[in-house]
Figure (cartoon, rainbow, N blue to C red):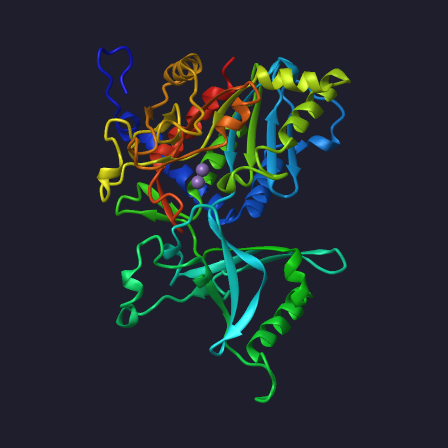
Length: 464
Ligand code: MN
Ligand code: MN
């Protein structure tokens, strides 16, 4: 993108980088892959963010007794929501600059009564979470993550499949030789939700005359390892995700394939940018929420009062008192970059995008004024004034950006957390990283966009 030219040209980030900056891009790519390998689910991602924040000098908001400029605090709620804040010179009650992302990603959750056996195998039943294309989740190695709350109330963590010595789990698919009937299904119906059952065991327990020997053998192993019994599944949150690490893509290593770029790439960049923000006029906040992929409801979704409570806590620490209207007013004076991924142009499927209003890999962070479906239904349509403000912040900081909407007008659509905080009277616009194969087990992003997005968020944190 060129500034102050009569026509606009959205150029490649790579062309704007010198040798040293290209090295920075590649180094950030390495750190990002490590972050992603530690962040396969919302819970472990929240833990990883807090771990890195503590390392960067952030302290638990619940343990501080005052908040002054330059202080760095974090809040972790229910193991799934995180807020990081660098306190500004201006008090929190006058509004804060927020970059908000979500750390949940589409996956396969276990049902609450998941374990059974059939055909000489123990299997677990799943219920997909978020917008998955179900046919993509079969015949690939899967890892199991999550927690189980046992009968005595204690909680155990589960993580199996990503250590190279671990076993993996696997959902079978038909062989082409016998797929005549399945081949006639539409792509959407190709694999049904109730067909997403994963193999978890193939060894029988005990004597031939006994019943459910495969299931019992798995339960015995779970009992030995986690102290759990079958009823404990009811108070568990267990998620199947693709096994394997984030990997570079291409001979030139210019991009990265990983599970859950949507939206942990925006989580990572907003976190990194905040770690580099030491002095700011307004308090800079990185917000990480759960449940975006299923509508942002519940106590860990953006619709929850959680974030308002964090703002209230900060105001109270600064003023000694805080009422509901103080919080509402602080929200109304705040600004949010809703940091979520955008659909990148896919040369295999050019027909779904308007080439003049789509984002491209490598052309930088993408500003999305509105999402929604059809006639902008359900969108947050950011006002021109705020888009103009953000555009100026980006241009002044030398950020390479592009602009896009989600595909052709009548092709489909989607949304983000943007509208929720906009409904709280806040200025909000979507701005994030373009991604290929969004919601697939492994998605792809460009390292150049990763780098430029962190730069964009940092410029916003520092804005007045
Ligand atoms: Mn998203
Ligand atoms: Mn999504």
